[in-house]
Length: 91
Image: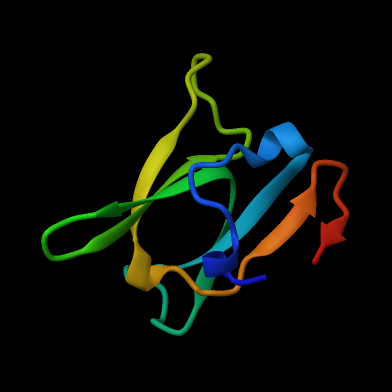
């Protein structure tokens, strides 16, 4: 599924799902390689020069607080995997 087809500012964990984003990392990894980041929520944050994607990471709460992170939208692959919490991939 494409990121543009998903609903921003929507809590996917309430539907029993999470998303897996592919993020291009530049330090220590070739530019054509991606790492996978499981998330439960995302929204767009449009800056003056850069478009950001703010995400809430799946099962990464520290001290009971949920972890939110900003990533440059240009470093996120357009294809997103939607997974049921039970581990089944959906389309």
